[in-house]
Length: 203
Length: 217
Image 1 (spheres, rainbow over the protein chains, first blue to last red):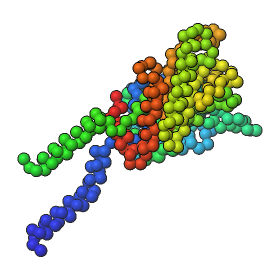
Image 2 (image 1 turned 30 degrees about the vertical axis):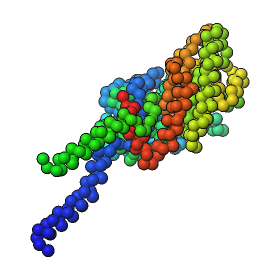
Image 3 (image 1 turned 120 degrees about the vertical axis):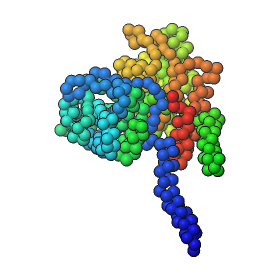
Image 4 (image 1 turned 180 degrees about the vertical axis):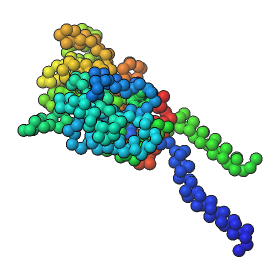
């Protein structure tokens, strides 16, 4: 085999191997991102958290349009499964985002104001991620904000010990940097899929 | 000019033409995902409560009307809502939604007792207390209505809202046009049904592309 043929064959092998690794990445970069969440296409600002406050007694603006993504979740501290799972998923996604994590906030709205004070909610969400925030308030104010976010919740019957669960919509919602409610994720979203969506939303 | 430049340029032109053809000829039609429908828990006639969570995985058309009416204008508008919902029920029943259920709901604006709610064939009536209705119907579904001191509805703007199984508003009908609301709903139901049937697996990408090209502001 001549040196010229060897060079040609070597080049072909090199091109094939390079294509094997590069092509999927190139195609991935060109293809539109397929969101795991449901993207909303309206442009109305997200509902304000009117009448709700954090442990320090301050209202939290979620649609200020300051460029950060704000994730909104409705839950309560006695929640046995879905709330801790979702909060842990968001915390894991923020870790995976690395330096971009600072542009992602989470606010949990407490749907059990009879048991959870704002201070207890603050402590609860901080267990998952110290940047997480929480708000709650009078029942009527919580109900109004929940309805505006498409969230239903209902306190179940108390057992002999006075314990009860709260059935609630467990979707996770994302408000974009312009203050528009832009995306809704199902409760079983994985950290991997959520991270991919968040990275895409952050651009 | 080298051949690879021509080839590259041709690919770019092809991609642009394909995108334009997709936007102009709309081989796939989709309804925009407008906003989240409000969350609620309201009373039904059978002593039960119907919640927005019951609508998960279900396509629902909501209408809004008082059960009782005073003046002619309100009575005519209320009768038209019932007629439109009945027509929509017939036309939506003919649409192939696959395994997806379809619900038709009228929310009573004058907060009657659940026992007074009528059984309107395929349409389910819901009611609640005055504050609940203000929150869900007035603020949430953005339906305009006025009541007098006794709670009777004196004026309302008929509105119909088509909500998909994810609780997202896909159609909002509030103005009269030459095409009847029931016909518009039927057309949109066809489009939504097709998206539900095909927006899984590989075709999901095509539907997301359709949303991207046709719906984004």
